[in-house]
Amino acid sequence: MNIPFKPNETFRDDYSYANSDAAVLRFPFPFPDDNYMYSVNIEPHVPGGPTPAFDNPFDVDEHYVAECRERAKVLEQDPSRCKVLPHMMAAEWDTLELIMESFATSYPEHFTLTREGINWTWENRPLGIRDSFTFGDASTLPLPPFEYITRQAQGDFTLQDQREDNLFIDGGMVTTQADWSMDFNVGMTFHQWHGPVPLAHEKGVFDRALKFLLRLQYGAPVRRLNWTMTVNPRLDTSPENYPQWGPDRTTVTPENVGRKLHLRVELQSLFRLPRSNAILFGIRCYLCSIEDLARVEIWGKRLHRVLRDLNPDIADYKGTTRYREMAVAYLAPFDDGAALPTGTAPRQSTLPPRSTLTSRG
Image (cartoon, rainbow, N blue to C red; front, side):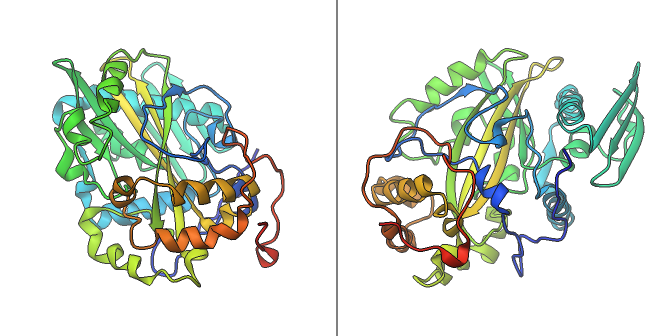
């Protein structure tokens, strides 16, 4: 099925990014219950889930072309957002093969991979790319293999090298991150990378996650969801650009909070790579305004409860302290207090028009 791409939408300046109704209904809503606390929450990354966002190894949606263009802008301004240590070349080729094969299988109307031995031809029709190259010979590609293919995929990617019973973040393409720096984190161990996260260390979340990931098997990828909130639909909320997006937090008012405040969800997937034994960590970012989320009845109610009762340490870590009460007040009229079923599926197939959106409480 052809995807109706929206190539001209923007994630900065005039913020023309917007979700269609279909995109809202496929949003990977992260809260199965009314309360939130850190957990490992890892499950097999198999086709299918609460929404179509879980149907393929690497999700491609209506924002694909625009997000790839935004990535190119970020890299033009700051090439350090893509960094791979020299010993990770085998993992670079593993990544290229995995993403090309997955795209060509999941979306044959948009991507084609032709292989004759080590002579490969890759065609990406949405971006107008067609290249023939020799697999394993980086000189035959216009860019290093990891940068070449991750410029053509939505979301961020890191490469974890496994050694000394630990994982080291030894490469990454990171242009849509939630306030962390690839340039600063490269070479860190698993626990060093997650050092700033409150409460989770005391609960042993990262100890259990590391033990699990060290045993991750090839052909058995896993996934989990993470979330934060972002003012305006800005993908690049990096510490390097904090002076550009940080002040946005002061612009939220009770009148505009529904439109400006976005739930930022990361569909995180982890793949053991075959030649390098490294782990590819995909961090696919989705943005949805709380106004649009409230059009899904169960999501509007649940988001109200999660934000209202959020642990203050987590609220502060996620940067929501300044505007969380405004978001809770905005969502409160949609919540009648009725018991909700466990799960994250939207449980409706259409949305009410934004112009008629009123409280359901």
